[in-house]
Image (cartoon, rainbow, N blue to C red):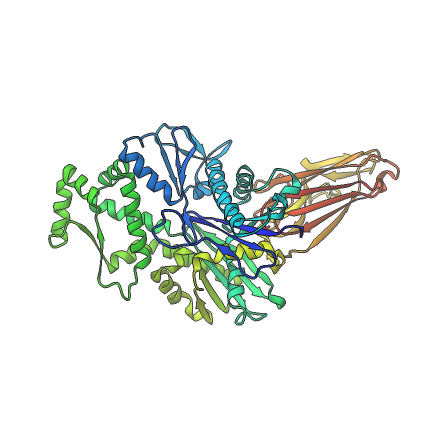
Length: 570
């Protein structure tokens, strides 16, 4: 690992909210921003919102985007502006074409590449972080002295992670060269949270303690399991998992119920004609959602209908309010949410969350867990905590929500950037391998892959998959795997190696349907002296943000390097 950096800047780019933290390498604690422009509350993140001008330029971001939209509406010039929210999840599950995921701009029908939205947002966060560092420290920082950490969900695929790296390049975090690539770590969100929990609870987390991190965010739930080892390091115990069961899906259930009570037409018209008030209604719901405690909230939660929505319905569909009043003892200015109704709004998301945690326990087989740590903004929900306690209290010694769970990933990612070696081993999420041409074995290899090697005087098998790491295998982060290769042609002057991955544990051939090509490396062999006995030695280094590959032609001494880049989680 390059030690020339002076400061780590971690960016937690979230579905609902995003923020940054920075930490100089000699500091004990990281620094994060707690107050953001136009934020209704003190919180370590701002809203993941962008307001785009009719020309596609960023007009405002964060909570200020909503305020700016209100100002434009007051002047009656907001029609062609586009308000973007929840676009992070579109990267993983949105519409895609040959150029990647995109969002349709409903104003004009144009496609907005998701990578551009993410790059714009990350650039703005980056600029704020650098401005704050500059204002709080003396001296000037050079680009090469900054190490960036960008958090990603554990459930994301290689393609999603690659897009995040490209977005970081577009945002100006790093350049496009291999050397620049070293300055960006993609950090798994639950892994960052595990580091945070280990730091705040050092006295409890003695070597041998096994901890499960349940990171409950706006879009996803991510889970990892680690064992504390000596000197405070962390070993991943089993492959992490996750799912799309974040708090935004509770919001979706609530909106479906709201449409049931006030009609879908009225809610859609309200969103179209009063977008700022609509978003403020969602903020009202956010406070209601996070504050709902089945033990203390009483039999009914009263959700107020915003004045502009009430007036809209009164003018357009007065019968809707009359029906509501008949149901609610004459009250047509609130939506009555019984305890049972609130629980039913949460239930589909919490059922999915609990099922995901259950699957992680099944993956552990006979391994015990000592502590479950609940982190992420959604983990502050009393109903979520109650449900986790009911389902899993008997299986662990303790369920803990550390103070300020919303800052866990930010601070953990900054600490990881300063000391990546705190993660000692990870369980590979995929099977990785290199292309091989082994000796053809009749009855084992298919005839279609049979090829004659004249110099070797034997048949070889094309498209062989030489496994480096199996899915689920525990891999030390400092692991090295060395393989020797020899040419099949005595006059061969180059070897072209291709690298692949698969979600299957056992793979035989590189052209199987579930196999994905990751990259390749051409090794030149200019000297043919030695013929078939020449050796190319290839070493794979399982480092932090990517697997590094080094190949040496032993005859010429030429050395070649490449990267198989997918994520810090292999």
